[in-house]
Structures are given as structure tokens and as C-alpha cells.
Length: 449
Image 1 (cartoon, rainbow, N blue to C red):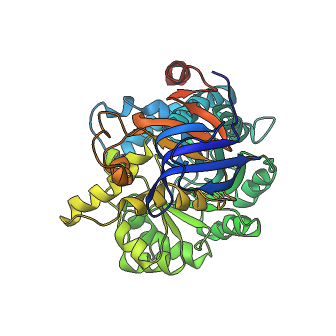
Image 2: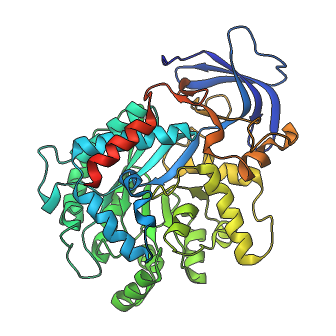
Image 3: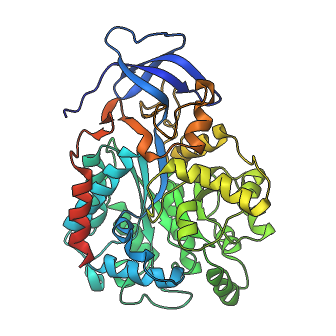
């Protein structure tokens, strides 16, 4: 199926940020929306019709591409996050730049089929096993950037500092390939990443406060600040991390990050599951964003984070598929609401519109793509169309299409994905990767051993 770039689209139903509007015509030029016209009862001449509900492209704000190879495998037996981590290390040990490219290309193509137009790749698998540097020190990161291009989606490569196994503990044998030795050496390697690519932006990440010594947190934060780049960090995913941080520093991970200048509006805390009231205040008052990953958090038995309190205090929320137990941002959105219902035994914490904003505009902002996530003139022409006639979505009134999409639809209902005006997924078929299931099966088999 050839890739095409039409100059106009007709949206049968369009979510415009606050409501669903029927009959919207969108003009596109140079990858951006140039005009949005309401009241178009039928497709204008030459326009491509997108039937169903069209929303801005979805932003997957937290991904570990190689975790896609764990799906199914880690569901055997019982355990905790820490036993899951040992299985994850086994896959990480076997990856090369070539096999990582193939696996990430397939995973990103699956994301495109799920309506995701942009991914935030939390990338810490930098070197060869044992920590040996590749001839290109960024070979693994470049493989991810190339994989996103081949799959037709945007990427923010969140190059991650990962320097220790725990507070005062050197990297274990698995983690040697994650580590640059010091934050200064991490910064030197990250500086060599090539910028200026249309589909890719470079950000930074602190893996966690246990993986970056306290006195080096500021180096990573300063690197991101000087470049006006996004900074992400795993935060308080496990109570064991909180306990170890208290023992080592006499404060919570959030307090430690605040002391070293790592919070702020360009920072996104991932998970933020086990927080104190003071932690919530530090994050919200600094407008630090929070990326919730409900399908992974429930898969790993992490717990339910205080998303309602965080947003109420001032933290923008975004969503990620993280370990890719499933790749479905609609499921992430509804899971955030439904998990909160289970905890609070009350309903209606977020509207469908608020959940869609987390999955679109706020997710893109967390990844440094402030010009995406909206259907309006000047925005990047990234669109996702969800069928309204499947067995999951048929029946409700069109004006309730947003509610239907969030609370009933799944990734299987995504009909079209458009990135920069180009049709990456058309009628449920990827236009660049013709057989995504085979690409996934072959790339996963190559690294499972």
C-alpha cells in the first residue's frame, strides 16, 4: 500500500478539544494543518474522508521498546517488580543495534496501528554487554531513531543516565551496558546525538534517584535545562526505592530531586505511585508533569498513583504504555479513571475530554512537541481516527463519540493514523510495515534466545 500525503481531509466527526464536531474539513501543507473548517456536510472535492471519530494523534509518553519482547513471558508464575526485572535483564543482555532496530521498528509500527503518532523512548540500553562502547557510542539510540522513522512516527529519545545499581552501589553485570560511568560522561555522549531531524527530538532522563548519585543529579538536570529539552525520571514506583532513599539521604526521592533542581515544567515524573503529601506539593507547585502508565503499574503490581491529587495540585498528566503489556492509549486513559474508581469507590474523576487531553496535547507537551496534539491551524498534522461502527463502538449517539472512544474503544478500533499529513495507517493497515505481526514475531524470536 503506497504512502500518500493528501492536501485535505474530511473528518466525519472531530474532537476539537472540548466537544465533538460533525463534518470538519482540514487542509494540510508541509506537514501542518493550515485550515480547519466546520460545517462540511460532505467531503470536499479531492479530500480524503476519515469516517469515525478523528482526534489528534496519540502521544505515548513513556516507552521501553525492548520490553515488547517480554509480553506473555513475564505472565508465567508469580512474583514482584523485582523478579520481573530479572527476566527483563535477560532480554536486554541479548540486544544488538541491529536486533534493537528490528524490535523497535515492529513495536513502533504496532503503536502506529494503535493510533500513536509520537513516542517518548526512555532509553538506557547504551552499550554492548559488559559496558564495552560501540564504535558509534550512540549506536543503540540511533537504532531507535531510525526505527521510528521506518515505522512512520515521531520520537523523543529520552537519553537516560543510569550509573548505579542503588544508593552507593556500582552497576551489576546487567547494568554495565546502561552506564556511562559518570553524569559528565553521559552528557558528553548525549551531546553527540544528532539533532535537527524532522521526526526526532532529543531529551534527557534520570533513570531514578537510586540509579544516579545525588551529587550528579544536577548535571543531568542542567543538561536538559540548557537545551530547553524535556527531562523525565522514574519516581517512587516502588516503596523499596522510597525506603532506601530515606535511609541513604533522610528524604524522599521527590525531595531529593527538588534539592538538586530536577523539578519544573519541562520535567515529567513517571509513575509517581507512592508519594507523601509533601511530595505531591513539590511536584504540583513546580508544575512538574506526571506520566501515568496504568497497564504496566497494574501488571507489575506497583499500585495506584495519586493522579487526582497531583493534577489538582498543578501537575499536568500524560500517559504511557511503558513495558507494553498492551499498547493501547485508550486503555491507559480509561484505566486511570477506572483504577481511581476502584480506590475511591466514586465515579467521574476525569471527563472523556480530560482523558483525551492527557493522551494527546499534554502527552506531546511532555515530550517537547508543543506544536502537536490539537486539531487547529498551525499544529502538526497528526491525526487518529477511531471507528464508530465496530462491535465495541456501535450504538451511542455521535455527540457521545468521545465518551465511546475512551470508555469502550480499543486500539483495534483505530482505522487511520496520519503523521505530518501522511497516511501511516490506512483502513487499519500499516502503509510502511506491511506485516506487523510477522515483524513482531521475528524480531522477538531473535532476542528471546
